[in-house]
Amino acid sequence: MSAKILVVEDEAAISHLLDYNLTAEGYQVTVVEDGDDVVLAAIDTEPDLILLDWMLPNVSGIELCRQLRARTETHQTPIVMLTARGEEEDRLRGFEKGADDFVTKPFSMSELIARIKAVLRRTNPSIAGDVATFADITLDRETMRVKRGQRDIVLGPTEFRMLDVLLQRPGRVYSREQLLDRVWGHDIYVEARTVDVHVGRLRKALNRKNDRDPIRTVRSSGYALDETYSG
Ligand code: CA
Image (cartoon, rainbow, N blue to C red; front, side, top):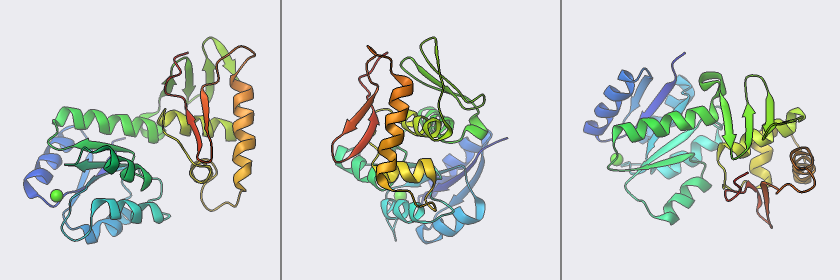
């Protein structure tokens, strides 16, 4: 099954290049050049990933990112932003608004494709169907098995999804609200402190007495996989 990619880029030379190369790579590509059409096109074509230019004439990519995240239909669609800006502050803004990754222009096509594949692997197991690994932790989305080193880890479905979310971007801090959205889904009302309970269970399952805890609690912010953890 080939993934569908919605390309949002107003510069024809770049959008043609993207269309040509991504199609050659086996993706089904839809190109939108006008920022005003993006949300509807995304709802209509149900892409597996949106490649979104930061600099668009009418509406900025970052604003579109916010709009896409606010819609039920596109809430979870991975977004890779194309940006001429490499500044850390812009990246942080982008991640805050829900972008999954950034590629800075000018980019090499092979780098872009590698990043797209990585985001799809993380976010779309039904297409990528594979194993997420971080340090000595592996999570197999097909068999629903989790291991830390050689040890099998038995997780409940909520803890499994939570670990899966954390594994998608080691180091990224997820707020309780973001975890609620990603683990429970945004239509379900769950109290924020429920997140703490399930993080506690996840830790208990993962860690034995002398193990280093791979989950970092960031006070008043949320939780992350500790990117300095190396097993
Ligand atoms: Ca542009």
